Amino acid sequence: MPFTAERLLLFGATGDLAQRMLLPSLCALDADGLLAPELRIVGTARSVMDDEEFRAFARAALDRHLPEDRRGALDRFLPRLSYQPLDATTLEGYADLATKLGTPQAGLAIFLSTAPSLFEPTIAGLQQAGLTGDRVRIGLEKPLGSDLASSCAINDAVGAAFSEDRIFRIDHYLGKETVQNLLALRFANILFEPIWNARHIDHVQITVAETVGLEGRVAFYDEAGALRDMVQNHMLQLLALVAMEPPTSFDATAVRDEKVKVLRALRPVRAEDVVTGQYRAGAIGGQAVPGYDEELARPSSTETFVALRAGVANWRWNGVPFYLRTGKRLPERVTEIVVQFRAIPYSIFGDRGAQAQPNRLVIGIQPEENIRLSLMAKQPGLDRDGIRLRTVPLDIAIPDAFTGTHRRIAYERLLLDLVEGDQTLFVRRDEVEAQWAWIDAIRAMWTDAQLAPRPYTAGSWGPSAAIALAERHGVSWHDE
Image (cartoon, rainbow, N blue to C red; front, side):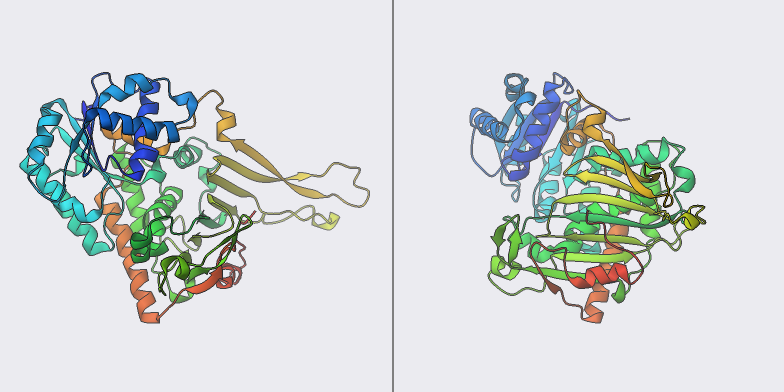
């Protein structure tokens, strides 16, 4: 049975993720009275500091990253924090860490925000210190490996100490409100589900565009590339949520069962259905930026852009292409899902000179959370020269629709679910392995076909071949 943890252990507690996301999320939860009074948060990292120094460190991070209106619980939150220095690669310090935490029978949640190379020694240290028992659960931050084999090795190491119902693999996109709203849109509205299939949908586009370059992630990114950094996790999770069958209920097992069916049904990608690119010097927002090879200070064959045409081999989606596109140094930061419906079978307005455009549903995830449905409407007038139709958008801006509620960081939901034991928005092992199997096949195809990234100018939407990838099938990317 799920239990609510009374201790939360943060590995990597002095890192960038902890400062920008984890500590602000926990403080915001406390401000809303969502953390149990007895919850204590212990941070650990290599840095040597005592409890008061860590609290001062946390206060400085919160001053930088927590909105002013969420700081009401700051004086109540900081005393929850304590700190224990630890070199995770050696076993010596784990006994002191266990002493700092107290008895795990109270319920312990562990958040592991470290390099994947530290996962196995960390698990070994936790086991030796008695911190892997039935009242302990663990959250794992990506990346979970670099291919199927390394992912299995990580999962085997974690699985040797924790049962699957106590392993919480994190994809922070699943904590975003609009991503969760995708499920509500599909399964709480009779309007959409009857037409959510190949008979009525022409294609689906999923775009995750970034304006930034390497941003201090040089070593990791050059090893990973866009396919493994973004497509393998975030984009395939979005695809699975769009394409999944209705689950029997909104619980962890039912939702994840349906997602993994989609991931296993992904068709193999052919060489002609994928384009990779690498940015060169250009301009973003009027500011000159260097090329990838200049930032790296050496040539590289790593892709910073990928666009591909995927398909799902099942009854609902047969023949519907899913276009995925992600890249760095693109013109704007945007994450969105576009569901393009088919054209009406016959237009009664054709002989009056009016052209009906197919309906389109755009689900914006970031930077703005919104849902836009385009409909056809008659343009006002006496129609002496014929009826004129125009596309009219119906916009639902999520923050405006729910005024008076805070816009939450995705990690707020995920950390609270970790503490309380709800796995619905976390990724199961079979999901991860299905994702990696598909990605590994694409990378093997690249090697066999000797595909190399095409150069594109920073500030553009990627190589021109990415436009051709869609347009040769009569599709245009949604760049509005």
